[in-house]
Length: 488
Image (cartoon, rainbow, N blue to C red; front, side, top):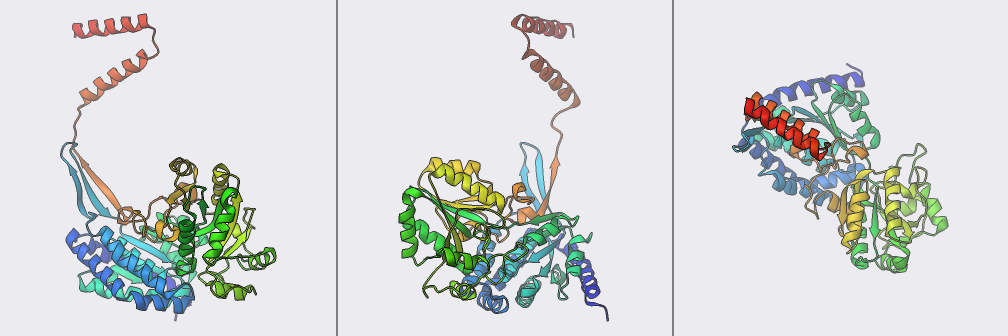
């Protein structure tokens, strides 16, 4: 008998070796064969969407099973519809005029780290984008969601194998330890890490020495500008923040509005059953948002208002949709200015849109840089100003943060892994798709000779030199060039 950490390391090494062999078989398959496998995975995820949703909520205690059904449907049907006609393997593009051909090359074996907040949907989604790109995938489950993750992997793997997929192309760790996860991330057989989860885990993925695509925390503000349709804006924010009890990282974390329309916004929020905390209530709840080490308290993650209110000994109406705390400050030790994966929002007011712009930057720079924010406005100039200034990869306009960021209510690629770009410590700002999981080989033919290059270089040098010459010097230079050409 091996100690658990040693058993986990050995299991991981075995899974990676088998996945590597399976991926070699996948790399020989045609686009049509790959697409058939993906179709089978999507169908399995879609057909079992309700069972998997209920399992996830029962095991983790996060979110609402009804909304997780929608997530599973999104991760299977919606993602498959987006990728089914995508070219990912073999010849992707031939440009006869430019004499260039592009060929899709799978990366190899992908290590996929799965969070407890969106466990089953993330497994379905990552399986689809990995296999579509001709890669094998090995899952590392969050321990708090291991049963529903294992069930999801079993279902989609069985369907994939029946469609012709090598059995070991989709696998999952069963003995879960930090040592096993570390082995998965650092092994030379792992060609890329696809990390979705907390900051510490994402940071570990990037420091593993292997290529990685990671997602930092979201902390998106929602700005309601004076030209906004206030009722619709409030409706979008509340529907977004209550969807699966706020467990998607693109969900709104704070509301910012102008003093000019502050009273109207507050009245509309109350009309739509938002509960504003008074100063004492706000202080009481603040103690439960962050742990002593400054990280989010899992006791509030994915819980409904009633559960959170009971935790903090708050007396709120039974029909309250979200809890809102008025706030003026931003900082690591200011809980309401941080990411809160539950139906809790900060509420800020400003004098004008320029102040809102600065405040959004401050909030995002403190946490959530590179991720997502929303603006509710009919003023195109202000929207453009926000787009140019905000350190986010997704500026959502007049839509729900949660569903807009993942591409459900927008035309972004449908994804459950959202890149945060360099400003957020990520290697990409994309909604991650199969195209992020392939390399592209380029076949090009020569179109210029050395003589062409030397001639072009001389021509360019003369042109550059001529830019700083006087008119007389330029005429003399041109005359000299003409004489030289006549002599040759």
